[in-house]
Length: 469
Image 1 (cartoon, one colour):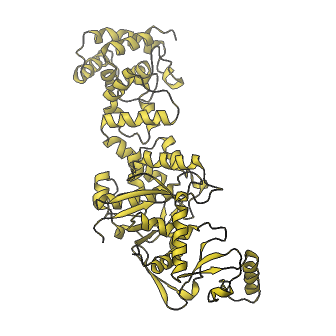
Image 2 (cartoon, one colour; image 1 turned 180 degrees about the vertical axis):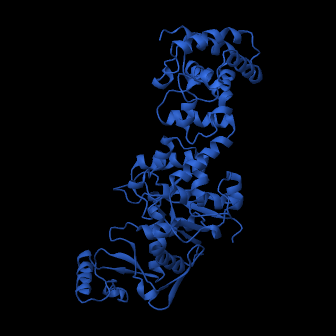
Image 3 (spheres, rainbow, N blue to C red; image 1 turned 120 degrees about the horizontal axis):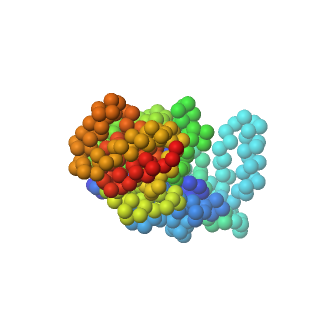
């Protein structure tokens, strides 16, 4: 392995950042970080008709949300077109490529006849060995002079050795007759010029690799280490599509999954380190290697994703979690937290983050913090605020005025009150939840009272007790 590892992620800006692309980016990022190398980003925007600035921004935003920081500036492949053409002409001058004057109509006619005669449709240019003196004064494409004998062996770190007969490869076009370079040439030139040592990408690119290796060989350039990873399938084993759920990274962000949980889940989607399921970024960077990538397609499982996201929320630092929630609110166009609410939310995080799998779930649990008086209890909570329950609250409240505001004292006051009134605590808990949160499902009533503080808690109880049922 080279001393300095350079990986890259090279998406096409023709749509959102697909979850499969995000995993490819993650694998490249992890590998580079593990080896103290560089992770670079190249936007493959040579398809000018389909590439959009909005898609480019969506890709950048998605990577930034996932925390996959790239080194240096993002590179535009279209901006390197002159360099690609220069390399094609170098190959032409060296005899490693040749001018092809065949028209699109001639190539189509060749393939149509070959198909009718049930022979290979692989186009063999009649201009490959023509004397330049016989060349017409006409537009031409530049084609790579591919060996017609022997084999090309792709030594892949995931797929193993893949051998392709050279006579199954055509003399691919490097430069079109209008002077524009093809994608297959651009990829090789850009990877070489960027110093890429490891190409980690989806196995749908495997068929392109033998042809790209032909360019490396013709130029005498070092071939990178290849690692073609299987695609992601849905739970039914079929290629992941919209019918399985969200496809774009932005959708997962808007749903409220934490980026740390997404990184953990995507890393486990096709790669493993023993039986480890939950791990930190530091552990992933320490453990990640190409040998741990499986050969079979992985299946996307939303339950596993949610489970891991829940573990990451529970394990998160409270201040960092508050920052993540603020980002989520901004990304989804919701109102920002006031300083007071943010402080209370961080104070109460200890009783909110357990068993919350997404930020919306955590925010719902924090309803008692984020709501202002007077509360408007929902339908289920109102059932716990009948006249009898209001009377109970009215009678309990004076006992709290002089209580020391800690869990032990509050539990003692509540249990003593319940005993004196010959009731189980559960009979008291329902009205307390309704009064403090306006909900029937909440964190512990004592956690809510501790977070809200004595003054606010008593004010809410008084509000509920004084309402007419």
